[in-house]
Amino acid sequence: MPQLEMAQHLKCYLPILACCFVSIAVSEEPAIRFSERLIADKYGYTFGVAAHDLDGDGDLDLTNVDIVGKNPSAASLLWFENDGKGAFQRHVVHEKENGWLERHSVGDLNGDGRPDIAVVSNRDGLLLWFAHPGKNVAGAWKRYVITTNCPNAYDVVLADIDSDGDLDAASAGYVSHTLAWYENPGPDGWDREWPRHVIDKTLTENRTIRLGDFNRDGRMDLVAASVGASFATAGEATGPTQHGASVVWFENPGRPSRTPWKKHVIDDRSRGPIHGHAVDFDRDGDLDVVMAFGMRPEHVPEDRHEIAWYENVGQPGDSTAWKRHVVGPLPCAFETVAVDVDVDGDLDLAATAWSKGDRVVWFENSGDPRGKWTMHVIREKYLAANQVIAADLDGDGRPDIIATADDGSRRVPGANELRWWRNEGRR
Image (cartoon, rainbow, N blue to C red; front, side):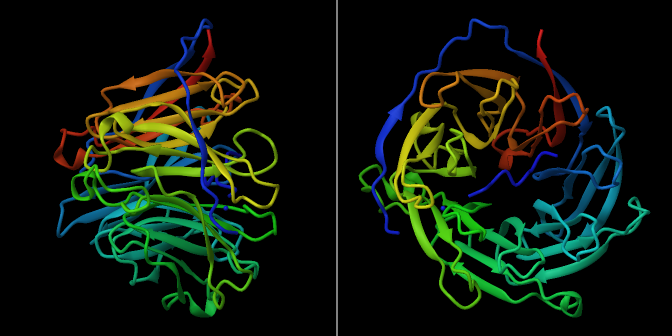
C-alpha cells in the first residue's frame, strides 16, 4: 500500500556542496497519459487529502476537507469510499466544526487495528483526532482533542516518537514558527489534552513536517522547512542564513520528552522552501530530501521558484553533508512528492504550482537523478493547486495522482475541488 507519509527521514552543520543546475530535457518516448476524474467540487475552501483503506476492503479510499465561511466557519472532514475502480462515494467523518480543518494524517491512534484521522484546525490552533467507528465506517467518528495549544496549526504527522508502541503526533505551526510533538497518553488520557513537547520555536513560517530515520538508529526523526521572511521584507541584500529560510532535520534523542532534539541543517541559504519530504531518492540506502521552493513571489523572486532535491552525501547514518540538485523551474511551486510515475524502477516527482502557477506536473527521472529531467504537464489551469499525493486508486499497479485546489487566497478565483488523474501508462 502506498505510504502517504513518504518520509523516511535527518552532527554539526556542514555547508551544502555545489548546487547543481539541471536542464529540462525533451523526451523522445511517448509521455505517460493521464485521464482526469473529478471527485468533488464546489467547495468553500479545501486543502488536504490523504489515501488509506478506511473500510478494509483492499482498495484505497480518500480523506478530504471542506470549509464554508471565514470566521465563523463551518468545516467538514470527509472520506470518499472507493469502489475499487476509482469511483468514489462521499461520507462525512465530522461536520460543522467551528474552525479551519486542513492537512491531516491517517493512523491507528487507539490501537484497535483501524485507521483513525488526525487533522489540524488552523485558525483556532487545534489538533483533533477522530476515532474509526468500526464496522459501520460510514457512521459517526468520535471527536477527540490532542491539543488546543497549536497556534495556527498547519500540518500534522503520526509516528511512534517515544518508542512505547503507540502513535504520537507532531505538528508544524506556520505563524507560531513552532515544531512540537504530542505524547499519546493511552486510553486513560484521550479525553484530555495530550502532553505537549516543543522541539523548536525558531522555524520562520514552518510548513513542512515529515518523518524518517536519518541516522539509522531505529528512532523516528523529523524533517522540517521554514519559508523564512518574505522577499519584500528581507530585501535582496539580505545575506545567506539571515532571511530565516531553512531545510533542517531534528534528531530524535531517544528520550524525546526529556532531552533536547538536535537540529541538523540541510540548507539555510535557499529561500522559500514550501513542501517536501524525505525519501531514498537515489536508491543508495540513505535518506535524501525533495522540496518545492516558491509558492509566492513575496517568498522568493519567481526566477528562483523550482523543484529541487538534496542528495545525502555523508557517511551512512551521518546525514550531515548534502548536495543540492535543481530538478527544474516551476513558478509558484507548492508541493512535490517522489513516486515512480512511469514504473521504470526510478523515482520521478509529481508537483503542484499554487495560485498564478496553477498546474499539476510531473518530472521524469532519466535514470540518473543528477542528470537531465523532463517536465510533463498533467493539468494546466488547475487554479491554486495545493496538496498533491500519489496512490494506486484503481489497483492496476500504476500510481495515480491526486490533488486539491483552494481559492488562491483570492489571488485567483481558485478551483476549490478534489480531482485525481488516472495513470494510463505509455500508450
